[in-house]
Image (cartoon, rainbow, N blue to C red; front, side, top):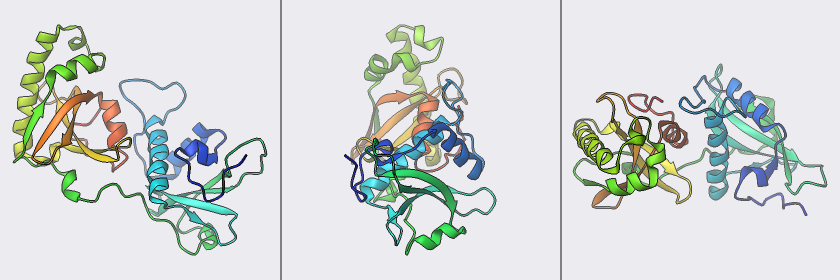
Length: 264
């Protein structure tokens, strides 16, 4: 049984049939402003654009929650704003879908194409959809150095040791704790002097803004991991960490991050 045309399932794959998804993503990468969409510390054999794939899937999730899908006047098409700009004209890029004629697929929609705001496809819509929006309070995007930052080092080690690069992944918990304590202290000092060190990310599961701060273990100027910081009102807490590839994956959903340290 097919979805209703106005139904917005939780995932992009349930919303629309997208044959040759990796090729579709490659087309989007070629249309959009030039950007590095690949992982640097791990390989994904299925695609050269893993960050872009994750970006598009999660952008849809947010847009579906916000109900920011536009439908054509004849109800034969729909589209959403990808949040990206075309590389030549610097116009918003939209993903367009048409009615799925495959009776064996439950998705009502089938991917059609990407189009720019300046193309003739816009004539199908009385109004183009808005971009995804991820925060109510812009202050959440900035680290407030007046708040205490409490880091649960023990929990970070216990739950995330596999994410630590060599040689740190082979250290004892006690040795690793000493390195993390020193790195956290250095990160706090940097944050007091430059709030932009903290990079915001959107946690899609909870729908909340978190901050990423560098964990420099091998060199004071090179990040090895990113600590995830959550705002608890009067204080910040951190109890997990991400690889730099994971951090870039998550941060890109909001904006192209400053590569000051998040440079995997």
